[in-house]
Length: 364
View (cartoon, one colour):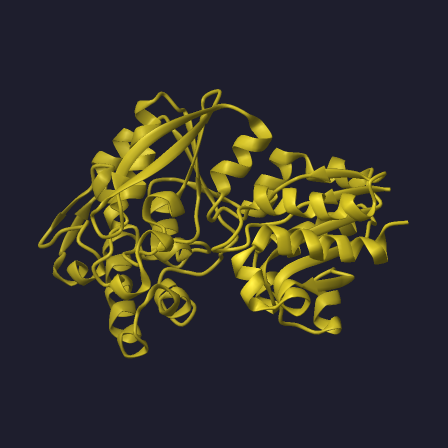
């Protein structure tokens, strides 16, 4: 039997590469004769660069940038020919700051702009930015500042709390820096910058923004969007990564679905066409997985090739009917099998055990 394993990261415990290896370890314990092919995945969020490096090779360049709260943050950019791949999570990721120290009203996205600038200065003619997992909600203002944009009346790189004082923004230096560079925003998020579905109200709480602050902070981003370009602010994807999508779109970026981009890079469809079964997975499998997440994207590729798809997850939070609307035949939970304590203490071993048990059902 030929099995394709294409998981996302298990947030906080395993990278996508580690998760894929764990699944293969467990599966082959039960079915050593099966051909298990690994295609670790990403939607543009944490792990985007690692997954593409695994698939494409290329050169990793180390860069130190400004983290969301101004502390230095190590990051890498991947050079493949004249294309550079970077990810917002490395520069301004939520994981860089303990929960008790987060203050999204002052968090800056400057580090992502520094990472893009480093890619351009390294000679990249095409820069692909994976968006997701950011700690910031500044409309991408900090990133714009790092790329050369200037403002009157306030600082672009002091977090969203500094935006209300700004009366004008000059993007021309940033656009000049990128005038002969193709910029691509890799994200499946289609939210606008502001409003009920905007960056603040949709993603602000998970970054530490208190409920009673959502309306005011959203108004700051709405005003900032009007200063820069109201049409772009309402475009799909402007709200990605706390508004980093907006910043990239202002600078002429095209927008491509992150899952589809990675699927193409790793040759997922070709691998699936010759498979008997497709396995995907993530930390929490719920109905939000339909919103551009890896399991849904992998399941769609499996359906295109008329192959069954199952999911292994830290927790499974939907029933069979909802699961099948996502294109997944069955889903299996780490927590249900080994308990929450072991799932966190030994995630690779627990996932291997879950894969071994799944092979009892699905391996011929």
